[in-house]
Image (tube, rainbow, N blue to C red):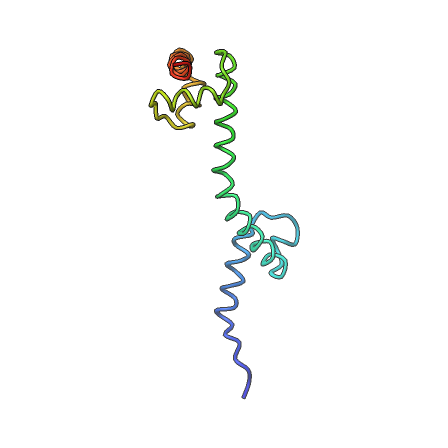
Length: 119
């Protein structure tokens, strides 16, 4: 009895992998053996970086807030401690946006933080 390979399913699987690696350089986009490897690596990187993105954005927001704080004459850590003492609950993303787009509002927050941390 001949061996059954289920050719339609195999061909579909190969087509799916090659379609997902379209645009990759060289053999990784043309040959199934290499495309399968590239697709696996791409999936691993995508999974890892979806989580890493959150860390990187938080770091960016902190850098922006710190720069705006220094301009207003206060350190980042003192500013955040002052906000907490003043019961101002803005997240770092919102603070970063304020620092970029509304310097006057950010300066007012800095003043509130300064008074709260010194009191």
